[in-house]
Length: 156
Image 1 (cartoon, rainbow, N blue to C red):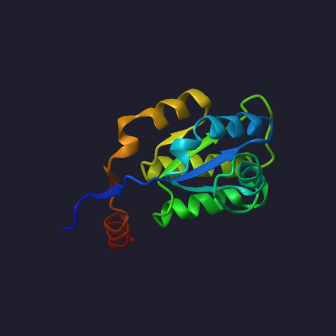
Image 2 (cartoon, rainbow, N blue to C red):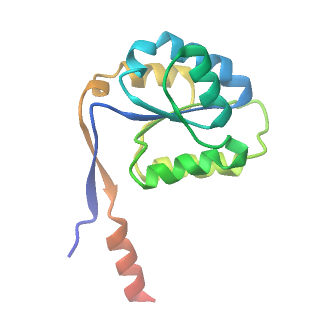
Image 3 (cartoon, one colour):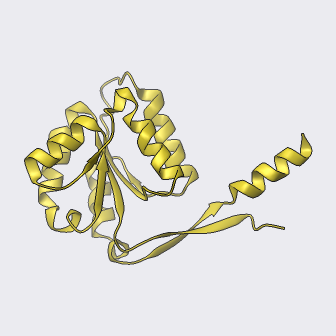
């Protein structure tokens, strides 16, 4: 019988998604400038406008997906499922309604399901980036979905 959990490894070189709501983009860009030395050592990904602004204003290399409202949050979520993204920095705006709020919630849910570290504000991002784990491999346990699907299929 398959194990209930499987081990995923986040390597020393992290695959980091950078996302920000419109009102938070300037804060994230400044944070990227302040942490340029660390961020340039990792693979960076992000949603459309945010990625372009980060690249233009910081010189960091970042792979861009669609804008959040046009599916970018969902693309990042899919990359989590595929094992590409293992770390998220998301400067969200808690005071402004977002038209793509269901997409943001879906991204947060998939990050939780796959046990992906996710900062939703600057303070958490600072703590995560300054953690000793930034320079180490990190093994984490994730539910064995294959076993779960097989068990569900047997009961239906």
